[in-house]
Image (tube, rainbow, N blue to C red; front, top):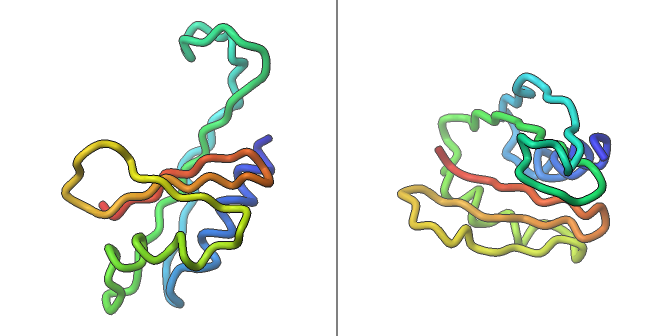
Length: 106
């Protein structure tokens, strides 16, 4: 599962403008779904991976985020966050790997 999350994140990173600096935030350990911290009771595990991307000064971050859904393959579906934000944000779901990514301009 961790490899799937990282592979999905890499697909998005590959579409970022040349000169983007990407760093992996401290990694976390996959949690079982029945872990009390997850507030879940199902079987399986979940993993939260995080990347931080600093775009080159010439890039328009809002445009980059808004343009991602059109540039990704058919296996990707995009949806709005459902929360009013002051920056661009999109939820991307990789149906091939069953991974959901939240991408935002902060």
